[in-house]
Image (tube, rainbow, N blue to C red; front, side, top):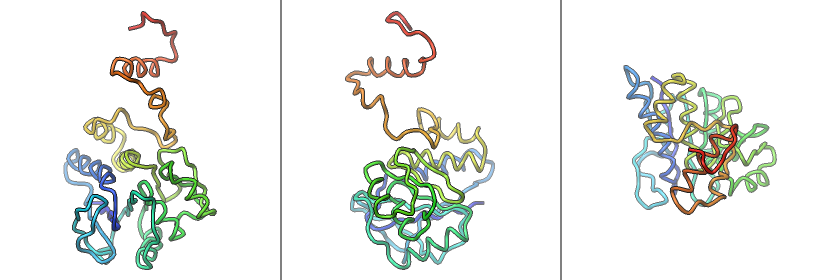
Length: 229
């Protein structure tokens, strides 16, 4: 069983838990649970989210993880504690992979984990990440990036795409596809896909127009007319 340590910091966004659901569903598709998910923090105990309620965590001392993931906070990031910095520096050496979701990339950057690596984060904070940490090769318009053992994702739902890609790496494409389907994901977005949606920019006002736009996007290889089904 692969142990996943998910770091929650004070003020964390609960949206990032969507990525953890990917691993939960993957467990349901295997004969025996493949992943063990543990919420961890510097001292253990309750950690308060940005919405005001808390989750219980184990302390970093639990250790022994295959994968360590850290989520972000809604305001971007703040200076990490010395203990968190030390833990992240050790994790990139002692685990198979380390990942961030959304602005969690700032914590990895503070620990030097992203130095000389390609990385991404939420588009609204990408320029700040590049300016503050010039050693990081920030690619602001990517869903997620894998650079060696370090995985980083853009904001919100992109962390779910990153998690599905991890499942694909671990358990194969078929399991990953089933998980994506059960989560009602339109499709599994590749890491190189742009963060910004052209369809959102078009700002469809009704479901009928949205359906037409999706159809057109899926059939750009053929002539499209008013009479097209």
